[in-house]
Length: 262
Image (cartoon, rainbow, N blue to C red; front, side):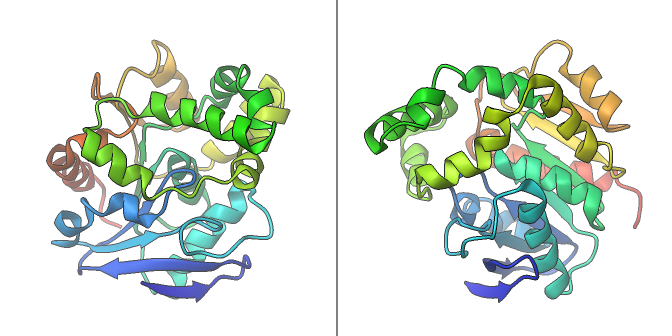
């Protein structure tokens, strides 16, 4: 593990493995780069793999804010400081949103978003019943966030559930800071927010879900991100890449093979 200081303020913890075309791995909320551990060796066989701890997560320091452009900017600054070029950026959950912003603000050869819908208005509706508990005392918050994570586990085997849980540092201040724009914004404002950053993505984009994202989602996403591909691996849940790692690595390589030379 190494660290570097970014212009955005936080010190970013990271690991760099392998050699070849650059590939960046971005984890989900409260997790860390350790979530990707099973996938790093096969990906690093033919890539330079950068796995980062997002600001305020893992071993990275606190950012001045948890605004999405700050998180994405810190990752982009780390890529630039390490002299990596046109990476394929892969993000899971919150990391999928960060990867999407990255694809619109910094050079990249493609983006893979794992199981993170950009329909943030739907996410707001899903959180509505839990919001009072999420904003309550520590015990109420922990009970509510446990409901969220339990629902996300899907088909993860028990041992892998325990491993992923061990990568999390669950803090109420962090979760609320990241989710505040969703909790406090109107449906219309969330739609405008998504359009403002997704519309900037001009690179090939794969949205990979562990279940069906909704009957009209693919059409909606392609309207936002020209040429985006939406793919569902049914019945796997929120961690399809960890449930079927060999299939995921093969999908990364097939997606990469479809990209135009940079």
